[in-house]
Length: 216
Image (cartoon, rainbow, N blue to C red; front, top):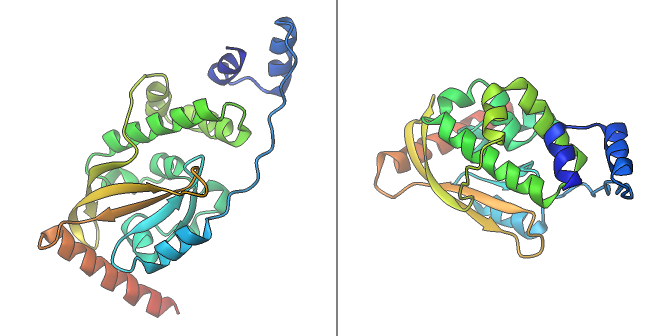
C-alpha cells in the first residue's frame, strides 16, 4: 500500500522515507538492477530476420536490440541516446510516431497499459518510476491514461502504418518471450503473403539495404 502511494504521488526519496517512518515501517531501499543485455539466442534470431522487422524489448520496454528493417519501419534507433531508447518514450516524444501509426492513440494507450503492468511488477525500479513521472508531466494523454484501468494484450495485434517510403502497411505484431530471461521479448511484424503490405515490406527492405550501403 505504501509503495503504491509513493508511485501515485511521485514522492522523492526524502518524502518516501518520511511516509514510511510515519507508518512505523522500515524503509525498503530500491535494489539496483543490473543493466540488461540482449540474450545471445535472441540476438541470433534477430540477425536471422532479414525480411521481417524485429527488435528485443527489455523490462521497462527499453529497446535492447533491433534489426535494420525495424529501424527502417519505425525510426533510426541508433540515433536515439541509449538512455532514451524506450518504446513508450519514443512513442510519446517523437512527433513522427503520431503520423506513422494510423491509430496512434490506440497504440499509445496500449503501451501505457503495458507500462503500468510493469510498474506493478517492479514497484521499486527508480528508472521506471522516473519514466512515468517524466511522461506524466510532458503529455496530458499519458497522465490521463496512466490513471485508467485499461488492459491491453502484449502478445499480438494488427497495426496499421502510414509509412513515408513503403506506403500503407497492415502488419501483424507478435511477441516471443525469452526462455532464459522472461524480462526480454522478441517483437516481430509480419505481413500476409501476396498482399500490398507484404510487397511494401520488400520495398522497405530494399530501401534499408540501399541506405546502409550509402552510409557504409
